[in-house]
Image (tube, rainbow, N blue to C red; front, side, top):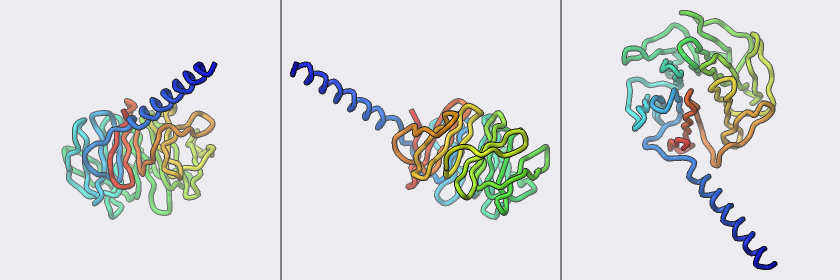
Length: 234
């Protein structure tokens, strides 16, 4: 009987160590340092460096682009928008930034047809054609998926979903929410842990903490640590 218990104990220890090793190996460190990241897909991601410089991931490495921004977002179709340090809105077009009328402090791009932002006084705006349309409510952070799904967080950390032209409160508190599509909603809690919405609450999905993260349309996940280190989920 003692031998059986010993065997079970060894097996349990082996499984525990194996599971821990798997958690340790979940994230692969990439070259470079960023403060913000936005992912379209595995071969296309954009980020902001520690000095607000703009970088683009080509699937192998980050390449420096023109511009100095405080917010950047890329949609699943490659549409990329940014907000300058003076709150001016810019669109990446023909290998350069084109100034777009309007001012924001944060922009979120799901695709060329789904662009939202947060402006002065935490006002919410969405792009319709060639103009910005004011949306009811306030947000500290907004995120739109490639299917048009929109979620946001407020200054009090409450989480909200935009449904039928109105905001509906969702369980939990987050620093920021990250939307891929209606079935793939992520966030960072106040411990900076990556969490995922299960339909009723937020599940902690991976070991470690992140300062920012983004989920691409193909499921690619990139994250940035507080020290600027960049990681990709295996």
